[in-house]
Amino acid sequence: MKNVAIIMGSDSDLPLVQKAVDQLRALDIPCEAHIYSAHRTPEEARAFALHARENGFGVLIAAAGMAAHLAGALAANTTLPVIGIPCSGGMPGGLDALLATVQMPSGVPVATVAVDGAVNAALLAAQILAVEDAALAEKLAAKKRADAEKVRQKDAALQI
Image (tube, rainbow, N blue to C red; front, side):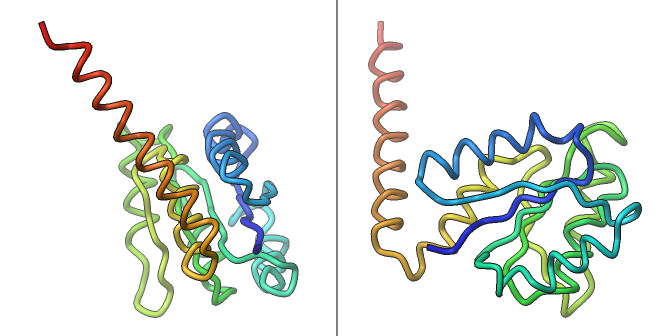
């Protein structure tokens, strides 16, 4: 199975990124996290992206706030799928990070999840990897069934 890399722009993003790590580990997907800044360590971020495929990665997740150029900087240097997690902390609601992440120029795609959407970023990465991994696809299907059952149980408990 390919690994997932989670790159964060700052260690202040770690509590959010941990949610993605936890979700990936729950699905038995190998992952690792790094701190690279699109602005403070651009060469390191570029080098990581350039060599990610040969280093066994299948998807990159980038978590950044405010100007949020990290996902685009990674996507500019790889053909692997890049998923951006815009982080709150700048403008109210993380609007600045959301717009910076989602407004990529033609030819440099970045899939973008909701502001602070680390769990969905992990699940999207898993779905990408599951295209060629039937066992992982079944784990995702089982998760969906379990999530649906939780809703049914909550509905049943609500009935008066």
